[in-house]
Image (cartoon, rainbow, N blue to C red; front, side):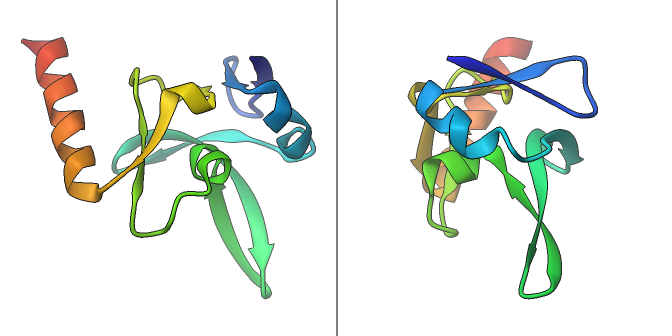
Length: 103
C-alpha cells in the first residue's frame, strides 16, 4: 500500500503500489456527495468538465454497478477493499453496515 496525498485534507488515501504510478500525477481531493465523502479528481473530456472517483478508476467498474468499500473506509482504495456490486446489493450491504455500527 502507498499513501496518496489529498489536496484539501490532512488525510491521505491508500492505493496499491501498482496503481500509484497511474494516479500520482493528478490532484486528488475529498468531495462530499449525497452518499458521503469520496476521493475524486477533476477531468476534461470532449471539452466538458467532470469528476472521476478514485475507487471507480481503480476498479474500472461498469457504470451500471457500484463500487463498495468492504471496510467502509473511503480512504482505503486498495483492490482488496473494493468490489463491484449491483446497486441493490450495495444499498443492502451499506444499510446492514450502518445498522451494525449504530445498534
